[in-house]
Image: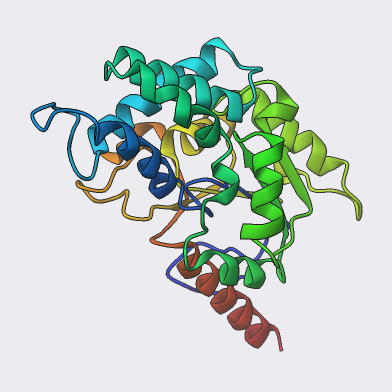
Length: 271
């Protein structure tokens, strides 16, 4: 019997797939640090010289997204380096500075910190589900993140854009994940049977394609539901008709707590 609760039932899934950077890892803080190295060199009156450099971050993110579409097989570390070089030269007029930060920026994601709630939440969740990652980041950076930043949480599967040859929100990234999950031991995980739940922060990269595919999803909003907190994951007010997540939580910790509550209630009702 499914538990009676405020949120829809979460106890029937076999696996969770996660976006990593922005959902588990504090991607925007790491991104912001690199952007500040550039914007701090601008004249005080420059429209992109603000603190925090939100407009500059969004412009750099736009450059990055355009490169993801035009160069889908380019690994993320190289794509980041190319993006910040192009942004510095063409948008900021700072050609000399980009060379000194391009390569470090490309290799930085593997050093970015998890949100404070991430690791504890993952440890709770791995006791209930198989955990997988579907990330746009390259293999080198994701390996550092999984081995160091997210330890001791364990993932049964990690899929990257470098493995797939394209970036989310392309459907083939999700199809690759589905195929790999079906091949897993213990009968695998079949998303078409309702066995997979996708967990992500980004509306544009994750929740828009999830709705198109029909994949159930959880929005870890991390303030993105507020007017002043949309960040770079997309504006909910502009995208609300294009997403259909069934659950929303402020943090991954809140999500894990609700999962534990539901499983405990279900066990009590079945005893």
